[in-house]
Length: 248
Image 1 (cartoon, rainbow, N blue to C red):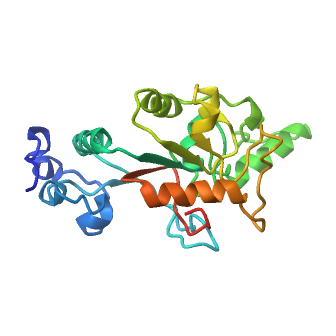
Image 2 (cartoon, helix red, strand yellow):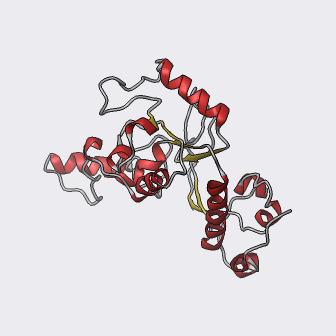
Image 3 (spheres, helix red, strand yellow):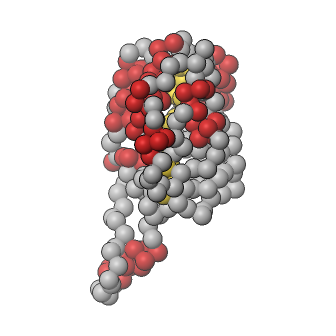
């Protein structure tokens, strides 16, 4: 039986109908997922609005799509958070599967952000900004703002998202964190090393070097991943495009 629709979502479509907002033109299942058990509530949710449009592919060469970015309206996001909380409380074997998008808030670049208006803040700078930076270093005046200075990702610190996920583990709601990132930010946030599977290698672990794109995954880490796949009753994908890599 579908769950009751939250009052804050009631009439949301009517409230936003007069706004000139560009939204994702797709069926509810494509906008919000399958939502087993609360499909009726899902169908009442507004499609996400477009926050950054891009004609580029997010991950060229993979099972990819447009790099355009979208955001839910606040009532829809709150409704989703409530449902996710219910799923987490019910789960006995919860696995987190994270990608580069989780660490963009820490200033570490990802692969999929392409728009100069990207919410990640780590999309490639505009060509004019790069040229301005080159000219300024050569003492040539330029009217365009320069590209921001680059910082070492080794200096990055955990974001609120990392700390929330670590709190989830400390509360007993996480069995394993499978991390495609190399940055060690979950451990910096307090995650025990035995909880994480850095499936693609790590910058801070000499025994687990970063796996090149043409390389092979470490056998023991891949075995752990497949065991998690077999037993997980809830998998939460965070900041990953799931573009068809071996670990996906």
